Every structure is written in structure tokens, then in C-alpha cells.
Image (cartoon, rainbow, N blue to C red; front, side, top):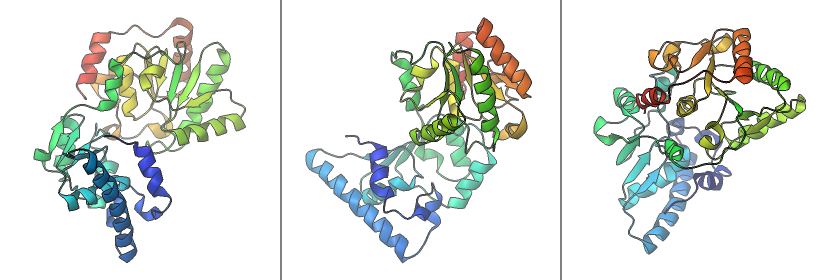
Length: 320
């Protein structure tokens, strides 16, 4: 049995105190009001789990992350009922980034889970190395989000140019706004080429679209349910410090990343990393807006550089 996480979050968001709606750090809050809130969350989850038990033999409950506040009620319910709580982790730690390490250290959250499936040994070793989870509870299974690439999808656009949003939370404060202006300027030169901004989630898509409309920029901001439908026939894919950039390795697109202004951060906390010889064979990093704009313009006029698809897949396999 499965139910939509978005619906589960929505069901709780209206009454859950804001201080408890913080990934991982919700565990640091204490007090009678906090205890009462988690009791309410547990009671709701107990009701759901017991209803499921009436219709089937429930062997376990699985969630998408171990440190999301929205799953705490389910975890508490499983603990009370003696049901294994498992995690199929959606996040992937490709670097031992200092901000991530500090986040886990600040949360003091010890996951009450029977086991956690992660994308690769990179994440398993990271979590075990900072004593978040014992290595025996971690299994490398790959990421389900990549399974969609095995399915046939009709392209959403005819050879688009895609910009992945890094508007907030990517360690590059304010840079996305500059990139958006460059992207829009080049789009104006090629009205017959689809230029698309891929948002991180539906709410952000609305925010970006509103900003574009207010500036009179005729670009589309979307959050497609399946990335392959947007990526597979792209001319160019532009992004920064995101797992989605690695998905571009499944395509023949020109993969382009900024490395100027606030995107010129410590390479050790960037993924993809500009000093990693594995990815630099398949991605271009640009140290200024002029070089970036010229390269993107050239890709649209003459097509993306030739790629070795087999080599790209081999590079991807080193991370997942």
C-alpha cells in the first residue's frame, strides 16, 4: 500500500508548529507543547497503520527520508506497535559538504530505523562516518528517481534549453537571478527554441513564473513529474550543485555549469565538482558570464558538442 507524501505533509502542516517543521532540527525542540504535538502526530499515524493492518499483514513501513519532520509520527507509531520502520533515502551525499555535516551534527537525531537504503556507498560512508547510522543498517541500492529513465516518455518540448533552478539552498546566494537574465537574453534571440526553467518543486515554479511575468520575460517555469521527459532531447542543460545535473549524463545535451560570482565556492562542497576529472570530461564549467553566454549561443546555432554516450553512463555509474 502506498499514499502520497504530499498529502501526508498537507494533512499535518496546518497544525504542526513551525519550529517542528524543520528537517532534522525538529528533534532539538523540547517542552510539554512539543510532547503534545508528537503525541497527536503519533495518534494520527496509529489510526492509519491500524486500518492497514485490518486489511493486510503489514510487514513494515517505508518512508523517503529518516530526518523529515512529517514522518516522525509514523516512526513513533511503528515503534509503539513493533513494526519495522525502513527508509528508501531520496537524498544522495555526493560530497562531505561542511553545511551538511554541520546540519547532522546540530540535529542530534539518532534515526530509529530498521534499515536505510541509500543511492551508493558514497552516502553510506558519509552517514556512517559522522556516526549518524551504523554501517550495518545501510544498504546501497541506487536511487528510485533514476528508474524513470528506463521508461518511455514522450519529450515535453522539441529540443529545449533547460535551466535548473538553484534559486535557494544551493550555496550560491543571488546568482540564479543573474543567470536567469542571461538565459532570458539568449532566449530572445531564438524565439523558435524552447527555453525552460526547471523548478525544484511546484511551489517554486509558481514563484519563478510570477517573477518572470512581472519582468515581462516570456519563459516557462515548470516542475515536470518526470525529468526524462524534459531532459532526454535537450540541446543544453544548465545547472549548479545539484544531483539533477548528473542526470544530464543520460543525454546528449551540452552540460553547462557556472563558476563565477557566488557559484565560485569551495570545490569540495560542489556536486558536480569543477576539479573532479570524471565529470570535467563531460561537463563544461564557465568562469564568467561572457564565456557562458557565448558557449550557449554557439550550442543553439550549431548544436551541442559530440558526446560519448557509453563514457557518460560509465561516469554516472561512479556516483550511483
